[in-house]
Length: 83
Image 1 (spheres, helix red, strand yellow):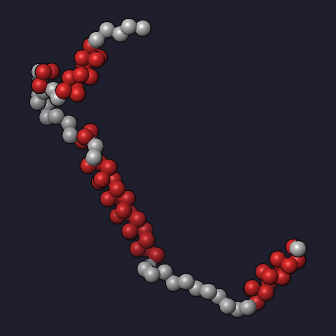
Image 2: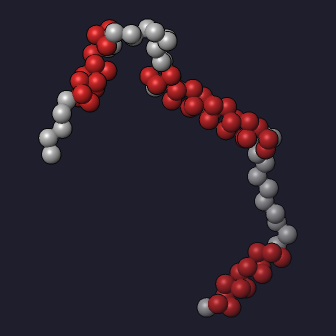
């Protein structure tokens, strides 16, 4: 069985037919396109994150001025823990 596979491989090499599939664009462009796509995905990820929007210094001096979700987190931290 192994000699049949070997014969098939040798006959494929001897045929002289070499199939060349040309790429539709230069190879460097694949890297450029991938880089642009990754940058776009990074921008999309950052745009959906609220972590980039930090309050200005002194904007929330009074805890009552904080948004409701942050006020709830602070109240949760200040509450005593029961184990």
